[in-house]
Image (cartoon, rainbow, N blue to C red; front, side, top):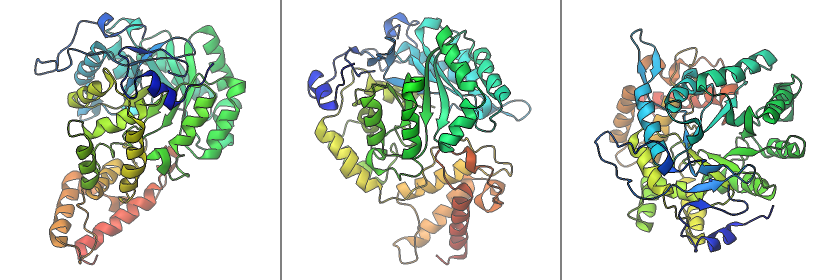
Length: 465
C-alpha cells in the first residue's frame, strides 16, 4: 500500500480545500450509505435544519472499503435523568433524537463501550440505532475487561454487547485501553486466558468485521503493541490526538500524538481519534487563547479548530466527539460537511503558538470519562476536576493575596465550588482508598490531586493563600 503524507494530501485536496464527498486515496481512511440514503431528514427541536446542504466527509478504510464518516459519535456522555426510584438512567429520548439527526446528516460511525454511562451506553445506543437499517451505520464497542482477567468475565462482556446493541455482528471491536500494565497487562488480559484467540476466531467468522485497540499509556507500551501487529494484524487503532497532545503530552500518562500517528501511518493502520478536544479543554481555553483563535478566524468556533486539526491528517478514519447537545452536534457537522483541511501554516499556528499558550495553564488532564465513578465514598471526582480546570482556563483562579481582585476571585471560587459540588461529594471526603487509580485511562493520581484541591480550598476558606 502506498503511503501518503500530509503534504501530498493537501496537494490532492487543493492546498486546504477538501474535495466534496469521499477521500479516495491510499492512506485515507469513508458508509455503505451516505446521508441521502439514510432515513428522511430529521429537524432540530426548533423545527429548523441549519444544515440542509453539504456532504459529510467520508474516509475509506483501505482494509475493507468501508466508507466511514469523518465525524464519529462518541457515546460516552449522553445526558442522564432520574427514574421513579431516583436511579440515574440514560435520557433515551434525547439519545434517539441526537442519533437520528446525526444519521440524517451523514454520521455513520458510533462508538460505545460496556463501561460508559454507568454501564448503560450499549443498551441506549442499541435502542436508538436498531430503529434504522443495519447497513446505514457502523457500530464500535470494546472489550472493557479492566477489573478481571477471568475469561468468563470477558465472554460475558462480549456476548452482552450483541444483546445490548441488537446486532448479530459488530463492525469495529476494540481491545479497550491498552497500555495499562504494559506488555504483562496485555498478556494477562488477552493472551493467557485465550480471549484474543477467541476474538481472532470471531473475526475470521465475520462476527467481528474489524478488530483493533484503543491506547492509553507510555511510549514503551505503544511500541509493544506495534510489535504485535505482524502477529495479530490490528485492523485499526484508536489514539488520543489533538493539537495540544501533538507535541505536549507528558510522556508518562500519554505519548505525543505526532509519534503515535507516524508509527501507525508507516504501517498503514487506519486511525480513530479520541479526545480531539482533550476532554473539552480545547473548546473552552483561557481567554487569551480563545482571543488568538478568534482573531485568526472570527467566523469559526473555538472547537472547530481542534476538529479541523485532527481531520487534516489523511490516515485518520474517524474523529470521535461525545456530543451531548444538539448545538455541539450541529457545530461539528458544519466542520466536517464539505470539510476543509487546515493549511500547513494553520497547523503550525495550533501545535506551536496556541499549544504553547495553553501549556501556561496547568490543568488536571481529566477528560470527564467517569471511569472512576461511582466513587465508593460518593465523591464527585470528575466534577471537582472540571470545576478546578474551568477556573484555571477562564483566569478565575485566586492565586495569592497580591493578585488583583483576589478577594473577589476567592469568594467567587468558594461559592461556585459549593454550587457545583454538593458538600458531601467534595474533595475533603476522599479517604485515599485508591480504588479509582487503576480505572483512570489518563493515569491521574486521583487521591493526590483531590488532596491538593482540598488543601487549596481550605486555604481559601481560611484566607491564608
